[in-house]
Image (cartoon, rainbow, N blue to C red):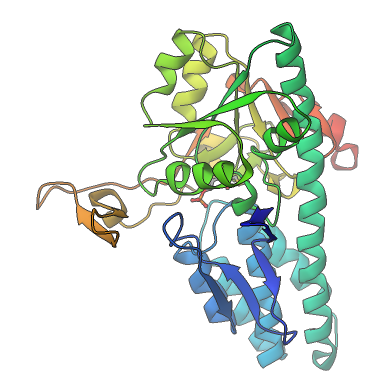
Length: 364
Ligand code: MRU
């Protein structure tokens, strides 16, 4: 997508052909800063500290982290160390494991002297594949938005609620939940997006609103508790969110607060769609509530908040009383029964084992 007229992906190879560039998402929306990664440690740090985040981009960064690692030391021991260091960064998004498995599968059997070139090539392929997948999700999901527009007699605007950031910043390009919105908007369908704040890290306010604004998509930011009220008053036509891990039975694990939006949508008859690339499906799991590891992050993300002060400077302030303990659960699980459909690169399916296997018969 474009930033001030220039096309950007969220991760790319530097001009010297070996360093890896990323957008530092912890600085948005206040500053647009790119950062160069030169080692596996840099990549692990970028994932852990959320300079990059979003399930597909975590996977892509891990793939390049492996490439940086084997460039420095292609031995079996270093390969294993890099895998373990990257794997330990964040537990919930299964794309991390998927990308590391892909890299290990191609690099493991090779002579160490051949590993670096192959690692860079596979990491680049993973990025290109993600772009293609996300664009297809956009096309498939836009058809749902078109149907919603047609239901309104082609008049008026389709109001879509989204949670967290599952836009191009969360992937290599296009996004998952936001891709259908971009495709629909570019096709001339009138859309308006309700952007959930997404405490504690404010991915909605900081990233989704920024992205949509840059692309000219009409949107309104709302705090996390507003969605239910909007749905009760017919102000949401559909919800589209992303997912960090989807079980083989169609349960989805996404940013904390997604489940409450799904409950409100269910209670109000609002369609609730989840957009996902196939590497986000964990075919080994069936019961999301029991089996998906939920990341718990530093309590400081809850007790402090960052913003722009009146003097234009960016600062972080404490918003809770000294001594009050805070808990920071980063994700929750929405059971498949609350999900209207899964939007994938191969089409839209029911959130169920049968639905997913219908689209991915090779997994049956
Ligand atoms: O903690 P984050 O910012 O990595 O969480 C991101 C999300 O929850 C996204 O909705 C999810 O990764 C899907 S991204 C296409």
